[in-house]
Length: 523
Image (cartoon, rainbow, N blue to C red; front, side):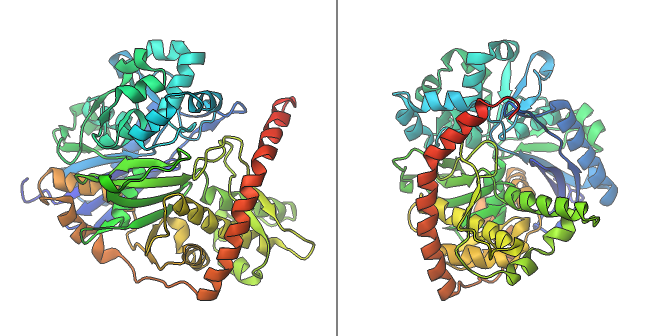
């Protein structure tokens, strides 16, 4: 690395936005550029995204970054890429996409998940991966395609994930990383593919679709001339393949610091709740739910539970407010409504309104898996107004967070949090009370991009280990802990008991609602 190469670029290709972020070698964020993602949904539960457009948007974000950072191309020591997890991005001969990608939001594999979960080999699959089956995962989606759309797989040569597809376009290399490989098709202890898992999914005959596994802290590939031209960078620049975005975000937000493992929640489109721990300390639950996802640190993994929808619930209720206001002749932006959340929360009274935040049409995956799970309010009366509904949604996200940590054991001693929604004091106080632990908000603006950039910093030798990098990039940016209010914590204890009772009792009703919808034309 020559002295002028003093920037590392982290690319984070999320569900809503693709971001390219420049950091100096000590972790200070210099600039960022982003492009909105586009995906399509269908009445059949599909959620798809164009592979070609995604690559074009990634290149556009990198060119945009170059417009903000002088001499970016010659100053870049390395770039690295992470992205939305799960999903299926198929490529065929000459790396041409085989149709659009199936995203993690896609619900079409629900029937296949149900049949696979009932199979006699499913527990063995879970013991290896540490991960429960759900419609999000590439394993379930490939199994569904193999049953109902085998022509897709017949035309494919490799099954990639979002970040893998971008890495292919940047380097010409078809590969995936140890985190997604092991929680989908492998063993979290070895970080390699596992025949038991592949057989349990009924995909032995499709094994050729699985790409090589590489660790981006140890292996990089040069940026190709074509990619360099598209992105405004120099050919030959080292490119690192990051781990899945969930653990990159947690790494950047403090799931590990000072050589100690911690808990971290990302409150974004989905709710991602992680506890870092040594492999030997992982205890798999009897329900067969959650994820075990490797960190780019030897012997350390994260045990994970994820809510299918987190801030999606806030977006939904604000969209309803915007619709009513528009009908009354007042147009407001989404940003204006977000700014009012804490005010509405303050106008409401703590009471008996509960909200279960299962707003995604794909149902729920953490801490239970049910493709038919749906959101709902409980405890409403004539005295409740819109601010009470807003409070219910915010507190519902906090209760869902507690539900996820309860499935992994005791509540954390401290919770590190990240995600745009955590700027809300109401949400932070609710999260702290729900888990009855101090919350510590990362001051890092782009935690996912930082986490993956940290992998590149280790790969090119800026740091000798990830813990050394964490000491500079993460620990100084952890805010002061916010201690829970004792009375609020006691109230959340009472709410949580009712919350779990209601969601367990609702399961038969969700099945009947799904059947009724399926039998109703146009529903």
